[in-house]
Length: 456
Image (cartoon, rainbow, N blue to C red; front, top):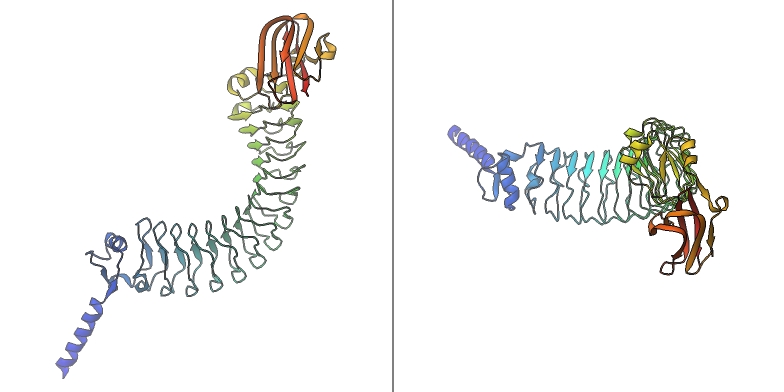
């Protein structure tokens, strides 16, 4: 009897030891072989070899089927991103705290049994819905680049990082997510967003939605704000004094007060409707992009840390870049400012050599005297006649001085016509150009004269 009991015990243990898990996907099994959890590609792996594994990374393995994952009962971390999965069953992996199944072809994902999850990355799939109501321990949720039309986060009060960009969300309720520090919701269809409960928010990216207003008064911890490409008519950042990066390009802003944002290092406010911009309080500013506005003057003399400045396509008549550290500026573009004659810099010779993106009508100078010496004056002070103005086709230039060159610019600062060695009189033909405003710059042996020409 004793021998029979021993035999039964041995057989039972042999049976347990020899129990196998079915793994039909050869790429999945090969990944397990590469990790030394299996040794023969035969669609089976010893269950005892995998049941105690706590971390499994089978990313970038061309896996289409993860059948067999159910027997990894001790899994805490599962990384299976960048494969070809169309489905994923992790209902048996109840110990999971981290799941990264991003960059697959999942159309659905059931994580209701995974209540211990703190990290979920399911971005770049084809999910049309995502239920995280059972995952109350979640601190990080990344579901970018899916097809979500709604997202209920009312149960996820521990959430600190949310990335739900590039979906089809029309609304997003974050009132329960008071611990949020990072929010990425760009490329959706949001028309409004209430952040009054999210006082811990430090990183906020909502660009390319349809927001018409944005109240940031409660978000005093913000350091990064990107709200580009919305429909904002105004933006108040006076309470956000820790802002380092402010990107508000491509809105409908007519004014922007950044006087309180003295920690800013990057300011992008291009393609709005700004007529003025004061950055004199921001000595830390390294990058300024304000192109595509209606600025008539810009002074960055108080910004010694600047490394790039883009102020093209404005209506600048005054630009002061004389900040004592011009050699730090590696990118400079002041083109398409047809009214801009003098650009004040530290060293005119250095700037002329290194900054080539200026209009032909603009000149680098170091002092007011040098600017005055260019003698660029309106024609009313120079005994020079331009007629008719407005014109339908041609206009004539008469002067007692010798004309050395004539250049005609469009409103973007582009030279459309040029003549040299004209002597004292010239006729300019604009018949082949569109109606609008043009600028003529006439260099004589005595001075340089500029004037506006209107073609009807």
